[in-house]
Image 1: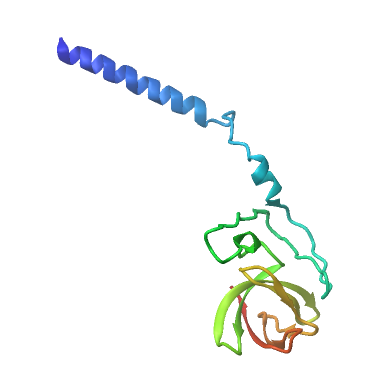
Image 2: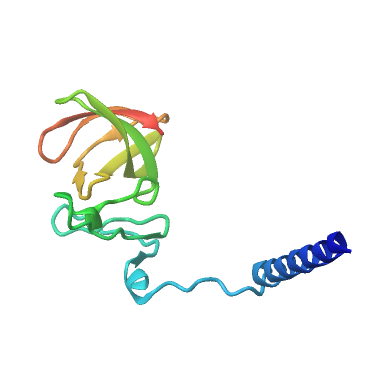
Amino acid sequence: MRNCLFLSIFCALLMACSNSTATNSGPSAKQPQPTKSEESRQVEPHKGDLATRRGTATVREPYTKPVDDPYTTDDESNNQPLGKFGTVTLHVLYVNSGNSYPVDADVEENGDGYELHRLYFLKGGWVDFNSCDLDEDYQGSCDDENGRAWEIEGTW
């Protein structure tokens, strides 16, 4: 008798849990809505202005701007997540330091290859290129607007 009572209570609890899960996980379930703070940090895709002075970034994928952590020396609110900016993600080598890493870039087709206009850095900001031709594999050597040498090694 005691086992039967335990089994009945266990089954009742199990049914209550499964009903709760079923009613909250379907297509009609309410999704958490972004807070006002999150809404103000949402960035939608848009074409940027590639002007070298006071230009704006091209955003290809929506993202939420990060919040700055006041306990660090970085301003995380300036971070630009990889894969969200420009038109393509490239693997580049900064010749002066020898460091190689992926970055987003504004690139457009030009006949038999591509022209690189801008590289976007993960910690914020970008560097422009006045004339940078890449081959059909997105490879080339270029100097940025400040005369620094870059090796573009292809897509990432």
